[in-house]
Amino acid sequence: MTQASDMPQRRSFARIGHFVATRRKLVFDYFSVISGAGGRLVFSLAYFIALANTLSIAEFGMFATASAAGIMLSRILAFGFISALYRTATIRPNLIGTFTAGFLLLGVLSLPFLAAASYGVYLIFFAGTVPLLAFAAVVFAEALLWRPVEVALIVNNGLGKFGRAAVLAILATALRAVGAILFMLGARHTIGVWSLFYIGANAASLVVAFVFFYPRQRLRLRAELYFRRLADSFYVAGSEVLFYLQMEFDKLLVLSIGGPHLAGIYAIIMRLVDLTAIPIRTFSMMLVQRMMRAPELLSRLAVKSGIEGGVFLVSTLALASLGIVLHFFPNALGRNVAEAAPLVALAVCVPGLRNLVEYQAELLFARGQTAVRAINLGLLAGLKAVLLTYVLTTIPDTPNLVLSLNIVFLLLYLASMLLTYSAMRRPAKAI
Image (cartoon, rainbow, N blue to C red):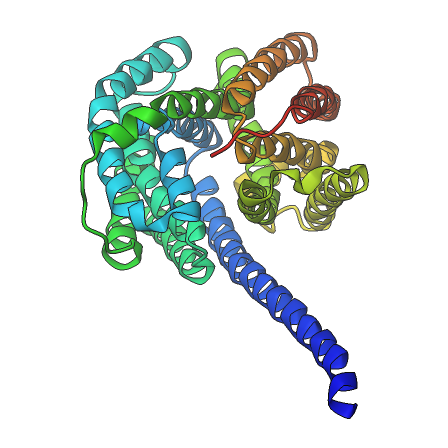
């Protein structure tokens, strides 16, 4: 009798033990990823301080805008096949070698398209302000050096090796910071010279990523596997280009309409906004992985609103804290940043709203709704272009311009929320 009565109790303890063990792994994984985000945040800040106070404000604006364009153009590399590689690492890790070979093949085939698109962007936005060689060097560093480093990070995260990905993220960002410090200590401080240091720092990151952190699997070409996923990859490539277009289009417009100096001040403010997104992107990445396995994870309204409220609150508090520090200590981040310091607090709602738009785009990717995601991002990019063009051409003074960005990003968030959650009413697509 005693043994029979003990059985339900043992089963209860077993269930409790399993629950705790599962949550312990989740918490451990989250803190592994957060540690990478924290280290990356520290070195990103060091990189930003060194560079923003070494280049002139105008040249910093040119570089930041060229870098934003390079990040956008880098999504053309391999025609978006990185998404297939990520899904493979998450769901079928034994095929990483096969899909890595496909990525390399498609990467080579995409180079003429990447070069043509880069030259077109240069003619439209940069001709007459940024030297062609400097622009080409920055795009080369972003698309062909840094983007493959991101591939190594993505694959490790997909495999659940969050600790290794965190170490790589810290090392890669630290190498960029070292490059900026070496540039600061050099004799010449022009965007042309910095572009060479930038190539060197990103090349060093690439070597570290693939020699020490990429999974060791034999490369095998299997064209039939790639062709079945090309349509989805094209959608992802298009949506990623549109995603970064709508994320970074403001910098392109400010450079085109306001000139390099205003672009520099704006780039400093938005770079500080970007720093608040690093921990949010960490959370989004882990949520996306869970949604790939369980697409109905956000079916409840309370869960959706709770997550969005948390994202907005954390982002807003981060920038508000930074704004308070810069109000009392305007030179805390250097003399060039001090010129933009009084404006930082005016953009208090921008990080939260911007991070929410980015988060919502990731939800559609997790559910396999890549075509809808591309359409939504195209609509948001167009709306952002209209709103920012209106703001830049009608508001002459910089403080009011920065303040109006809160309204611009609020309207973008509302449009994104409507488009995203309408699309999520449809069934998720099988991966």
